[in-house]
Image 1 (cartoon, rainbow, N blue to C red):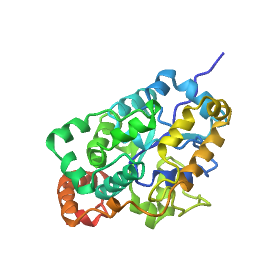
Image 2: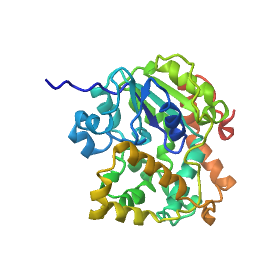
Image 3: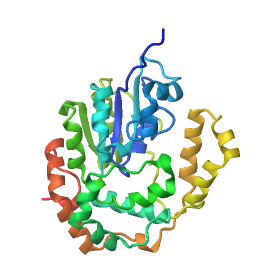
Length: 316
C-alpha cells in the first residue's frame, strides 16, 4: 500500500534579495535537516507543480530524504503570492515559517539592478519610483499573482519590473500568513543578523525548529548570490537552450541534486563585476521618498519582531 508522503516541516518564505540563499546553504549542511538540491522549489506558487500534487514533487526531489529528518525548502517568492499562505496551511498546518528581511529600499534597488542586468529595465531608479508609487499602480500590484517562470523567463522577468516596491512591503505580506498561522510558527530575522552574527542567526533558526543550537555550518559567513553587474551569457540564451529539444533530452536525465548544483554555479559565475550606469544607487531625494513610503510598514514589522529594525533610513 502506498503511503502518503510526509509534509514539509519548515520553509524559508522570503524575502527575495535578502539572504535566503545564504541561509539555505547553511542549513543544508545540517545532518538532521533535508533541503532539496534546487533552492527555489516553488510548489505552492507554481500552478503546474501544485496541480501535479505533493506526492509527485516528493518522488522527484525528496527521494533521498529520510523521514526522520526535518524537510524544508526555500522559496522566497512565497511572500509575494497571495495564494500561497492558504495553500500551505491547507497541506501543512504545523509548518514552521522563516522570513529574512532586508532594508526595503535596498531590497527594491537590488531587485531593480537585477532587472537592469537581465536587460528587462530601461528606466532609471527615480523614474521607476515615480511610476510604481502611483496609487493606481500600487493597488494593481499589491494583489497581483507573481509571474509563473514555467511560462518563460523573459516574460516573467519583464513582469517583475512592476514589483520592486510592493515586494518590499513586508508587514502586508506577512499579514497574509498570520491570517492562517499562529505567530509562534513564524520566525522573522533581519538580513543584518545573517551578516553580522551568522552563527547566532543559525542558532535562532535551529531553536525555532526544535533542534539543539550546537551546529556550525562549515560554510558559515560565506555570501551567496552577491550582487553583480551584467550577465556574461544573456538570459535569453539560457532560456533558448532550455527549450532546445536536444538539450532537454540530456538535461532531464540529470539527477535533480546535480541539476541544482549546476544551476547554482552557473548563476554564481555568469556575472561580471561591472555595474550598469543606471545602477549607481538611489538619489537622496528618491531614498527619502521611499523611506516615507515604507515607514508605516517598517513600524509594523518592528512590532511583530519585537525589536527595532537595523535600518538607518527608519531610525527614530
